[in-house]
Image 1 (cartoon, rainbow, N blue to C red):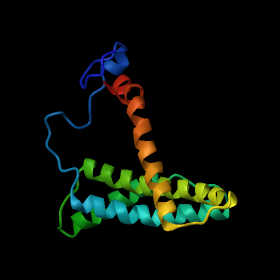
Image 2: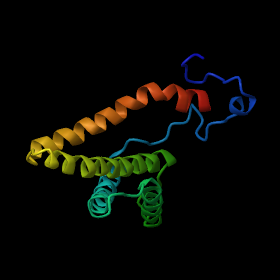
Image 3: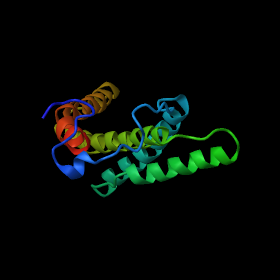
Image 4: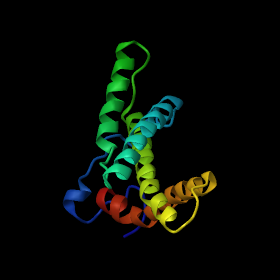
Amino acid sequence: MPDIVGYKPENPILASFRSFIPPRARLRELTPLPLIIGTLLGMVFGASSLYLVLKVGLTVSASIPVAVISITIFRVLSKLGLRDSTVLENNIVQTAGSAGESIAFGLGVTMPAIMILGFDLEITRVMLVAILGGLIGILMMIPLRRALIVQQHG
């Protein structure tokens, strides 16, 4: 199967898939407001995730709560007359918030193991683990793109 955007899969159900946003549509996506809101929500949910993982040993996914809060914040801003948001801006907020929670979880399970091994918790070591964990997560999605996006949605 070619790895081409717009390629139609052989499965008739998948071939009939229509994108929610037409390819020619020009909508706001990566603007400062969604990045700021996503960062703030990522910090809040990251802190709660870190607390949960250190206290209980597990956490919950923040994707759906962040998405609901994002829609609510943008709706309130719209009612105040500031501006309407697009579904792509909501997606940016949800992704940023979920990434913050995921990285905090990764740190919460990795740092105690590093301490058990006898290493100190230096800020450079913590930052390095967080950055490398995020990069590995992004790089692991590159080979999965074909199976999860191209073959599923064309």
